[in-house]
Image 1: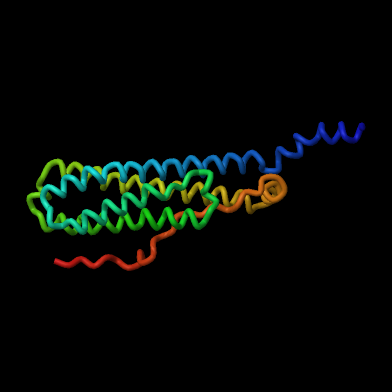
Image 2: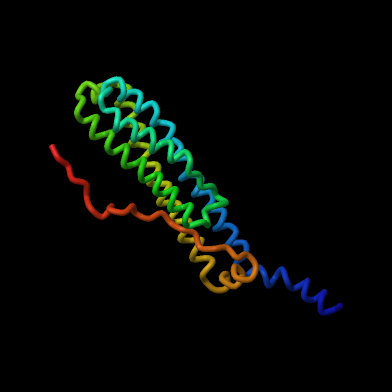
Length: 192
């Protein structure tokens, strides 16, 4: 009984150096950074219907491109990846693929816009374009911050003594960072 009492008395002091709290803090930082990524992607998804409607008024016969943008946005809406499912690499890959498809469709839309000088001069289109550019920058910043939080978290669960705490108490898996999309190493071809 005396040993148990002594063990319970010393346990808090032993646990203070085991990294339990720092691992929890790093995990919460990953979740918060993921929330920023989701918010940035949601902002982009919210801007797209207005952008599409503005372009529709000028480019009615470019229906295929407009439909591709709308469909890509719908796919993005179907693939939800919450903080609780960040540990699923397949779900993460599906989310990233859906966002990549939307980025690709938006790129095609901007090529269509180049063919319509009146549209490029339209104030509401310019406003949407600037908002979309700003949102793309926010997405990039949020992804970089997420990757930094993931790096800190993954390091914290793999280094001693935190790795012991994680292996025996928490069982938290490594988190997946954002990676470049396939083909990103090639610069896009610009044709006039």
